[in-house]
Length: 427
Length: 211
Image (cartoon, rainbow over all chains, first blue to last red; front, top):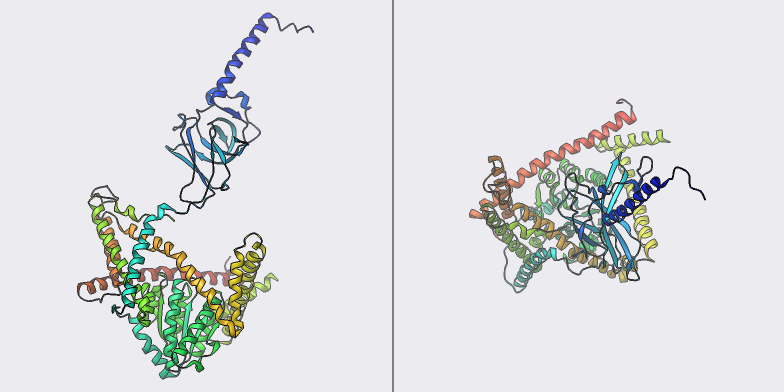
């Protein structure tokens, strides 16, 4: 076949020079990375036409480890930044790719995340792994031009794959060792003082004004021949405040049974209803008046917060109880309840550990158990060694905390040691 | 239908607000609807979310759901008086398991984090910064330290509040009460906004007086 006239010897020579140049250029480009098609169409420049200068140097020292102190399903990848990663440098973003192991070799790599460039240290947590499955990882340093949030071209250099690595769950989260030691110390003191109380040693508990008033409040209802209301709050039996409230309910029920005063307990959780019924029934038996216990003394209203508040409000204004107890977890309904009780002139004793609701109870009730007083109250009322010992043990814990705060502040004020680190915990 | 719902909502809102005047038949009706409807709503929600949504659908995949179902079944034994006492077992399980599960969380959030947040250099902006803090920062730091210290002293139950200890506890309860005062004012304002929301509904959505 005859070549066109234009392809004379000189033209052929020039053509071969270009070919040789391209041959030399392509391996150079490969050593730096490979071009990938941009993630858009339109004005995208063909990767083949990118200048080799646009390709960044790849990241180095890629390492992947099973994320420590976790519940599994996570691998942490770290790498050293590319030398082209600086302000205005070629690296704009790093992309992390993962491949499962197939016959001992990495299979198809898929992107699992990216991190913008511009940091000194890089690490990425792949939280989407399957425990026991082996993976390879590689990191791509990407140079790109973005217009209107769309990449018009990208030049990519990648590291060698690192692996195989697999994720697993750990038994212990060592970052929480300080909390563990703290719990052990606190538990030791609680158990120690419970044993002391059990062995007959008398442990002192100071007066709690709200609890001192329980007898008076029940007595007042008896004198007036009116009901006592006991509202155990909104939470279920999985809340410590409700459990403390149920303990106090036992004492109130025992007194009301002794004085033959009707006690009504409207609840908003089925589990609380069952527990409260058991406790009230037992208290009536303990007081020697099991015959006066009525099943519907403890009754369910609704699970809804404001439905519960509206129901209690209605009952309070119609039946005008002489005494109302609010003990447990309360939210926005606290003031609605306490104000209504106040408006009918009932003596009101409240107790909660909800800091945002305490001001309302303090303002509208006669007595308020503030925070931990609610938990200490059950020990105060029952005089049970277990509870009293526990209160004493917790006081020792508070003493240790106070000492830690004072020592820590001195050390940090005079720049001796960053003491607060000891109390650093993760969520 | 939408019009009817709007009028019904306005009727019920006014019924609840009428309680501000005094207990009346309108409020009683509204209260009964609210309590009854919400109780029914929660029953249906819990049935479909928990029993059907979690247990019935997920029981094939997660065998541990049978444990929850079994404990739930034990609760129903209360309906048979002779063996009703067995229903205490699931209750014990819930109380015990919850206490154990929450112990570390409460210890971390209510003790460790609080102590950590209270330990700071009194006269500098951060640890290692020397004595660079301004007067306002120093006063703020002292208030936090002394407030926390005295507040904690108030919550000691195994020692009588007498003498220096008693005075410290008294300062603590004052700090607590001042905090409550500030919190009270803040929350009252947020309740006002809730009330304004209902008035806004009546005046704009219902009566169309505010455009």
